[in-house]
Length: 140
Image (cartoon, rainbow, N blue to C red; front, side, top):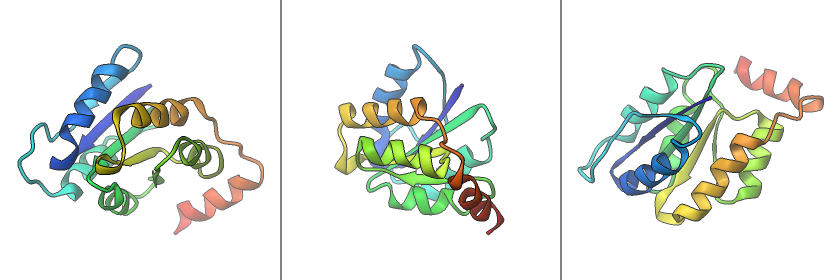
């Protein structure tokens, strides 16, 4: 499993902490940015979305997480979920088969982000009635 990380200037520090933690167990790919100089979040969301495959999970971070989630969901085959708590991360995978987790760095500390990612990674899609809904999303 590969974790594809990208962020804007508001989330560089949190992203680097998360990569350091998760690289022990996963192949972590950093698509930037790596400093606090102002950048445009759609450029970084695109880098992750273009490199997603069935063996990848995307982790996108920006100040609020909103911009990254909007940008990512413009891409075919992407189901990006902006999550603020562990339960949202669980439901995003279980019910929506989300493949990208978006996090707002200004509203989330390392421990919460770490726990949301762990939950996202360890939750499987429930399928059944949810499959039809996800298939409809993919056709939009």
